[in-house]
Length: 257
Image 1 (cartoon, helix red, strand yellow):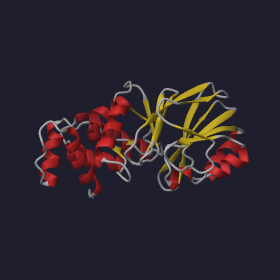
Image 2: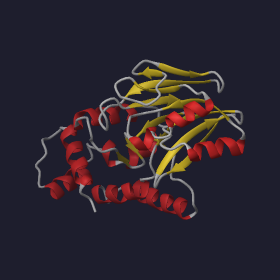
Image 3: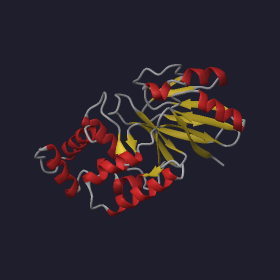
Image 4: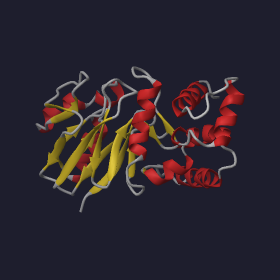
């Protein structure tokens, strides 16, 4: 049986670990110590390391883990990833024979120029592109790139689990409610997230279906959202231009208190 668990790191990062009680795969290990502690405690052998993009809080522990466990490192072909064994991109797949898992690689640029996701094991490991009720900032890509990357993720089956890399859900929900206060499902999500965090549990993974019903960055055609983003930004957005709505939403979120 395959288990997928979040290992907390830094202030609000999650390092996702896939394991079958014998072998494990680590996704975006920004630091090595918590991964090594979990592997040692549960007597697991690290079979591979997967990376979605080059930011330090996602790659900082890669070399130590690769050296200690002699594990191959997979990462985006358009970015500089330390200790990389195999660069991967769109249409590639990562096979983990120890776990019997195949993960398809998707190019999802925007947050960074070469950001990728790994799709498989019932979910998508999407790094900092799609968050619980939010999305990543634009550091190297364009609003159009990130919008289309998010639309691509939104096109996945609704039951697909979303394994993103930060516990941002509650803060993102507060922004989402400012965008779409009439969304009943969003209000329920706020209650659910609050209860999970109060009990010490992560709000993740979510699902594509939940994101599509509550995440404003996947709801750029909703009139309530368009009205509120225009009111907040002072912009008159062109009719039918979802990218323009998305760009305005992202800028509003950048400055949301």
